[in-house]
Image (cartoon, rainbow, N blue to C red):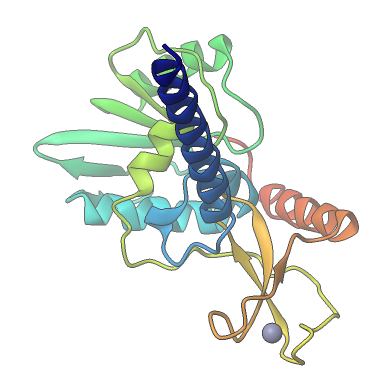
Length: 223
Ligand SMILES: [Zn+2]
């Protein structure tokens, strides 16, 4: 009678400890520095890198995906509207780095698409969620969809804006600004992986990081 009970208890213990170990392992893994863009799973990273670096990654991804870029493909940025072209279709781009997309933005994007005479507008929104598009000509890339979109960059190191950091690692080598797989900034020993010291930037530094991003975004109007 008590053998099934014992087996059940044993099985439960094994199941829950395996699950606990798996979750711990996954958390640990997500906190390791990302070597390449395709290892990053968090959208937070794409909000923090600043406009220029973001748009450079967009350009690299389009090229890797077989698009040809003519002129300035972002809608409304130049008098002569340019395109990303693929398979006979003209794509225009839009980047909303500062705020999550609203329903109003979606309507505006539909008007921009027809004004730009593009077959489709690819909209980049580095936030977890975006309203669904009711317009076939507007395709929103946000959240995990955007993370997946960038994952074709298998050999591209993640660009970062270096954080001001006076301190060195305990081993004496300077610390470098990196990003982990969860998409968060990280200070990592420059001798990594020989020295595996790393830490989260402090609040003051993280504030400077956000300020740095803002300064870069102020350069252009949001699109
Ligand atoms: Zn070190």
